[in-house]
Length: 102
Figure 1: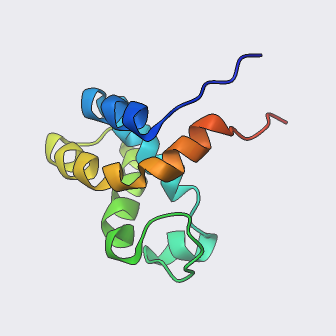
Figure 2 (figure 1 turned 90 degrees about the vertical axis):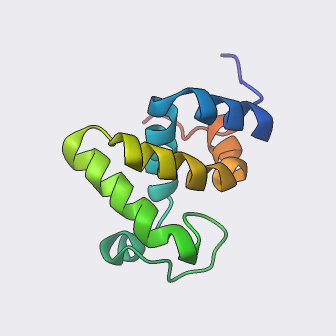
């Protein structure tokens, strides 16, 4: 099994080029929110993972929309791409340390 060594630069380049990567990244960070944070669309625990307080409502709404509809609109992608870039560090951690498959 080969392990990739993703960097922030790699992640940002992928996010710039791929709409699917933007949606997957939003879902990945949303998955790091606690259940309570997901329910209210806010950040209540400052634990260094998930969305920051300023982004929680908007990016949570994009994650929920994508899960319900299976796509993001061009406008959602535009602003979602801009916002998700600042989570490249968390995305590097996710990409380089995938959860074991049960």
